Length: 344
Image 1 (spheres, rainbow, N blue to C red):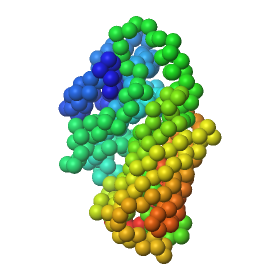
Image 2 (image 1 turned 45 degrees about the vertical axis):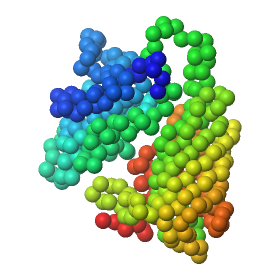
Image 3 (image 1 turned 120 degrees about the vertical axis):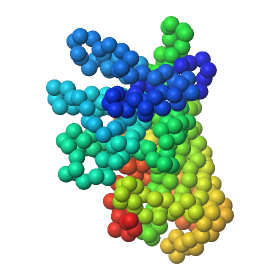
Image 4 (image 1 turned 90 degrees about the vertical axis):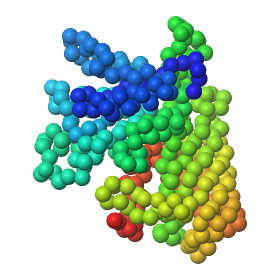
């Protein structure tokens, strides 16, 4: 993060019931020199139009949504203000962090007949979001916010400076980034490795794509990730559990071509033994090839697929899939391999 800029984050939540949670988020934002912005700090114009809120979100670099038990007050169409804010931020392709707070987490574990209509609407809203981080004993709000901010590429944020006018070079760069947003694939992804020969071979984990999203450098990528065996599907938390005792780490350098293909060599260090079809996989160092295709040439790229080829010391091949959210990855994996993944 540069010291010459101050960034901003719009905080969306039911203000009355989530004061403590908002204060924790604000404290962490300030540690990163990020200015917290929320509607409680401003007076909406007498017109009551949503454009007032849109303007504040437009001026923000990040969007943080706190979900509590209540869906909250709604507009004339029956949509809560927090959901409208989320939809707008989503449409703008902003970096979004959604946090499920304690009171919503408790409701998610209750039966529908135990909840009123407002609480049920909030659960429906949270389900539509797809992926959110839940506050629990292992992950506090402090931990969740810091992890989110530590994975962001601040060079892509506009931020605030003391210079009144943006230079022509900065304007040109902003226009280029908007035009080529489909190739903006930096950040953290959630992956699946599958074998075409052995459907029981399933590996999941995360991979970080390092990309300098500028005209002369965007095509050169670096990746580093972790790869684990699947333990089981946790039906209570709707999540795939990983066996951290059976994993590997890989790194590689790649080239992003103009047609959306990505090619590169990776090196992997395995810490487990197991079977890959008829091949016995042992611990140690592996080397191979990744051959990806960026599958969504739209304003937001959320899915990448490709092949992996382990070349040495034992040749193997299979499919690899990358998703922007853990929830999307889980749904895809359950659809393909749900019949053989243990459920608990």
